[in-house]
Length: 437
Image (cartoon, rainbow, N blue to C red):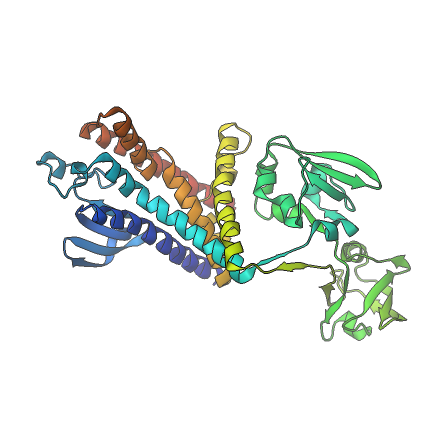
């Protein structure tokens, strides 16, 4: 069922993004009087089509792309027969280079606008919820396996990142930090300032599935949020709102301390000293064979919540949208520098579907769709023939030099670009499959 939901979200998200991307090309082309032969969301075989005027609109069975076929343009269809006839006024090739450039940029522009609108909407409707640096450093961090591998320890208080102040706990694992070169944390460890270097290839380890959960977290102060009926905790008298003060005489202040102790006490009887409405009480509880007693913790750390006006949301949402593009640029630099592995960084449709998750959550759906919209804009701007960016390069060359590349050159470049894209797509899909095992 989870796979079905992830697939459904992926198809819907890509259909929205690709449909609007191709619509950007279509509207720009029609603005300049170009004839549109086909507008398709998805690749053939067709599952629906209808012709309006000169244009056939269709949905393809393969939802991993789409296209607009503009008369007089060498595109991914590689149909060069029509190019042998005399140019017509309504054809792409007959229009000035600046108009053709705008047409090729139309899809990218629409994706950028969509990403910005989505993130502005989130800032306005959701605001911001976070654990502040001040609240984090009251108690310090929990360093898990990945955090310990770079030298962090549980209880460390992180003072700054790369010598600069930060505001939120989530800033510590942001792409800007993970993708930085020669990055470092300054920490307070038992009153001493220590520098923890972030390896340039650290993002490689962080990007592996589930490894983000093995980095760091903040230390939870807690009370009992829920007691499972019939569990050892329930039978032993633990109640909602109880604060656990000691376990077998050892002080318990943070939830990670309780977890670590319980892991070693499976199948034994324990004594908890709890605080119930400022009254101390001792409870004897039998731990099950899994090291659990059957309650859920209620977090007591102070979480900051901020609401933004619409005017405040515009620059914040725009900045968030463009940060995705900057992070992708940094990521590509690290791949080409050999600092991170392409196989760990690139995702195909299976990897992308996992971002949506196995449950249908509209908030998460639109967040992922907004992110993918900016990624799609960035990827399409890459100077690869067969992508919009390749056409932009050739058109820019034409505008600067006054020399238009020949149809033969454009046809061959398109073929090379298509082969390259097919290789990259095959690699990404194969990479997804390998990651599953």
